[in-house]
Image (tube, rainbow, N blue to C red; front, side, top):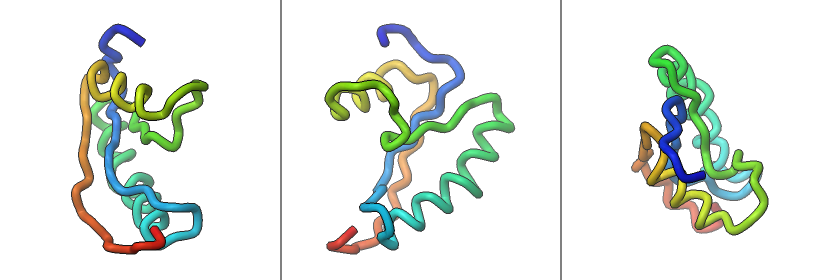
Length: 83
């Protein structure tokens, strides 16, 4: 991935483990807030746990931050140590 991806809105934020409160909140915010607004503006919202490419996740995240047309950071923090 070396070019700008015009229609991707890459979402950064706490994801947490499957079944955690952090994951539950992140999934709700993505489904009910971010995705509908992104779609309405012509973007496809994507989060790191949805990347299907094999390889190192850190490299993939950095490529999305650099190349995607829009990056959204959810900065609300749920301090769940098991998260």
